[in-house]
Length: 150
Image (cartoon, rainbow, N blue to C red; front, side):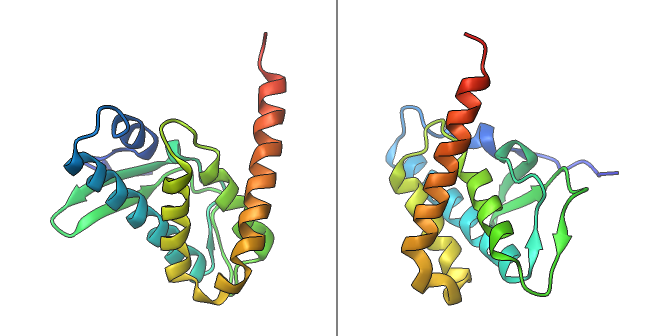
């Protein structure tokens, strides 16, 4: 059971809507949203929390005086570990990376930088992590494209 979160929208919709005809302020707001999301996922992973289905449609977001707040849906497969296994970290980061609408490579880098601020222990493995995220995301996107009706 989930209580209603007033004035929150799916993160996928928020990001899609923030990608069209951006004013300078809207662009700054989009960047703040991406950074806050990267920090939030980074904190979750630092705490050993793995979300079983971390698609952006399963995340609600709203802004208040303190900044952006995130609310996670579809939590039946969410697990807590004393130390998050690397393969689950990678799985969540690929799930986030699957979102394509209006997100640039710079936005992806902005997310990852914020994520790594919360996970400094894995900063030395950044290059390898980016390569793994990119390769696995590309495989998933290729397989997804093949399964679509023509």
